Amino acid sequence: MIYNAIPLLMFFLSVFSSEGTKPTTRQFIAAKTEITAEARATAVYQQLNANNFAMPNLESFTNALEGFYDLKAKGQVSRDILTLIDFSMSSNQKRLWVIDLSTNTILYNTLVAHGRNTGDEYAKSFSNAAESYKSSLGFYVTGSIYNGKHGASLYLNGLEKGVNDNARNRSVVMHGADYVSESFIKQNHRLGRSLGCPAIPVEMTSTIINAIKDKSCLYIYHPCHCKKLAAKMIS
Image (tube, rainbow, N blue to C red; front, side, top):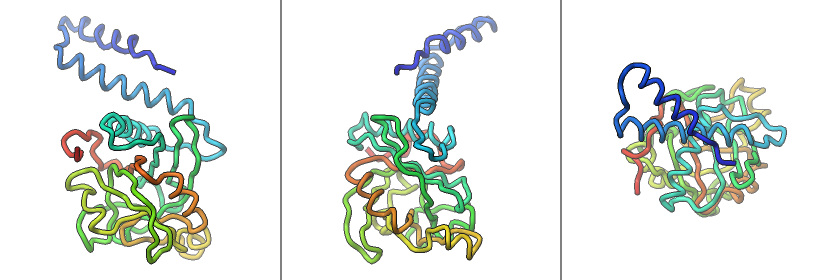
């Protein structure tokens, strides 16, 4: 489905006309780009087959999809799989989604941990620094699977300068952990925390990392993360 942004552009033009001014070329292009990105995200969001999972927040999804299309156009991701982690949510909620954009289907929705120094139940502080034990926000491209101290794990390559581009040096990867479980939440009133990795339930590890490996897009959202990528994205 191609979302028709022309009516929205006509509205934009009418607003300027009613004020007795004409939009500049730069304003027109900016409005067209913004409308197209938001309209496209809304259209895809409305078509999502949730598979009985909870739906992600529209704002986080819009940011994630905008970045996905940008990275796909640059050839930095090659698969139509988008993983969205929403760190604005409680860690007691299932705040990770794996979405197949070729069919607009949510494949998985599960728990995911943040770093121990990022916060308790809620993620509040983020870092790109080694030994910070904090999570890093932003866009990543997934790498290959390897066997590490947590078993099967997935390399993550941070794509934003100063935000998450130190991920590989910090050994920030996706792996399974027994502290990412409903039973841990019941005993401790919050999910367990990692050293900065987006850790997921042990029983879901193989399924999820095999679904998203090899150059798919992963986005870790929080309201404090800048929406615009151009100034920070590594080409």
